[in-house]
Length: 352
Image 1 (cartoon, helix red, strand yellow):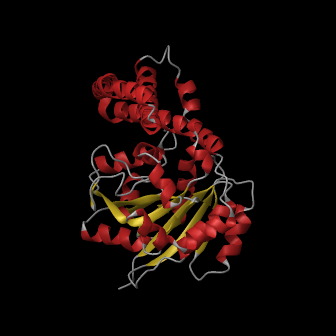
Image 2: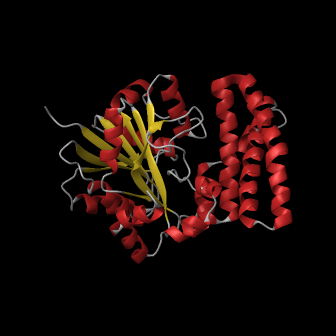
Image 3: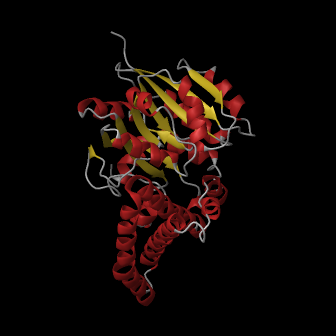
């Protein structure tokens, strides 16, 4: 009986230098004789040396590495372009600004098989020194897409109704893709939409905290501008999907609940932060306020599109705008090398 094949799909855009180390961490996955792997890079029409980087890297490894040119712009478009080239029984998703621990795929597959899950999302840790991570509030870390025992309750478990695993660390069974076919290119957040559709189709989804990926975190992503944009976008997208999958009644229910929370919880915390000068609390309150503002804007766009333009909302929360704000400037080579060579040490220090 042949071993299962896992296809690692990495969409990328103008991050050739980061992509090289992401590829290195992908091909150095420890299979323990339980599976084989291949890597597919879906290049979203980059203008840098991404194509050359992939071809040069492919010539240095025994793991099959395929290059796909995705000509249409967008994260969903890049993933959809790469999917037909994935031959695996399982498809694992990671991003070009990430580094995977050597046992990442083992841990994902282990949970999938033991708990009969068709979708398994792993942990995402910020690729920052532990002392810097500890200085950030939990709300900021969640905004930066950290998904760890610190920011998520419980260990290995099913995802709750309001939780959505990120595409930067996700294992999907072939049967899920056979059913859903591809990512919806018409929605703002195709990964959120994909996961909701999979859940509604009855596929089981679990969280695997020991399947760890490190997310590169440039200093610009810690800026107030980026965190404001990301928080606002998260709120607006949640409103869009609440209406899409729950209808107007559910949208109104959550709008009222969020408004009440803002008045009874967030506003008093804002006052306390102003009075005490607690800067960390002030940042957390600002994040929650931006999420509420985004949800409110999404709410009014959906119920009164004549007065609240969908186009202007789409422009404000466009994914590429976040890429421009965050800039995603690579870290110095020596820092990258250290992060890649010592992932186990980092994990231990963070408390995994």
